[in-house]
Length: 480
Image: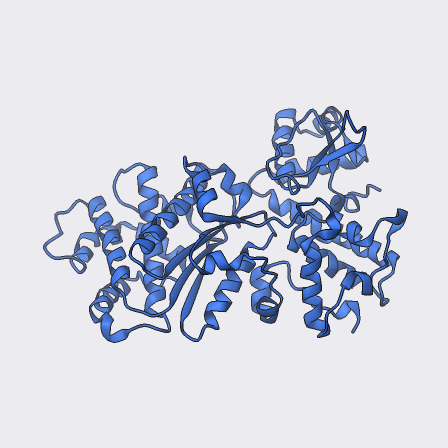
């Protein structure tokens, strides 16, 4: 089999699960991530964009589907989440800090109830009373919950809110029609939690929340909403654990988004309940990257034999004696999405087997133009405007250097209509996306040092340093 025929996968975890489920089943590179989530020890996954958050969700869902009825997993995407409608979900004038978590508890509990009634190991005879209450939720359009956007919009309408006191009568004794609407809503949420606690089933139930970063805006409401989601997911998981319920909510979140969310206890959650994905080797030696293991695992499935893709199908060195593994990995931000996209573009450029140096360079050019630059643009949506980013790209093309200082960039950008304050915001966003890094001369070793966000997650952009473009951008911007 030729290198061009190897299935390395898709850049999207959802697309890969749908079109190449065998790669999720056999080509998932675990590295110890699954166990803490499957065993209900951790519930928050933090990772940079493209590092494999969605793939972990798809893997858990697939494992549950193959468990012969002992487990089930529901995967919910927030891609089209109606944030403004959500802000009006809970009735009353309670401040956001209290209203948003209660609103999330309502949505999450409804999703769990919907999942439990479809669980493959339900004890139906023991759930007669619970199913009567669930029938009421279904009758007024709250179930099924597959369309989260519709559920939010429906729950935020005044017509539904008027039904809350009456609906509460189905879940508790006595006349509740005189209960204030906001208090009735909280009581209804508490009743849903009690319903979940009493529901009888075997095995485990996972609810996975993904897509927090699909649509980003600069509006505070979005960050307040996502912060409340993480807060309430943790509180519900604590409740389920206290009741010894085999139910677990898993939240998949981009690290850079988590860091800017409001809230006083983020570090506690991060330390106690999160797992972070980092593909950059601790040694700093890129030839030891686990991305190579991932590529070899995928290739083994196609070739049906153990293989080292890089020694069998690639030249040992590129120009100037640079090891090919290092050359390839340095074109990425050390994420599976980048690396798979690079290998795929080289496959498109390759005609020979093994691949020639010229074909590797052609593939790297395609990768830079067709993937890396567009991916950077996508990652900055919600942080900077397309116009501001384009002025930056035009400025870099005019400077035509891989390295430049902020004074030079600022002068060129100003002539194109981008003022320094806007440029500073843009540079911080580009640095956070690892599209640019910083370099300086070490006073002791007299060697050039480089810093990128993917190497040091705690690094911050400094306008006093020399800016260096990521290698993945060079060919797209025609900088050699």
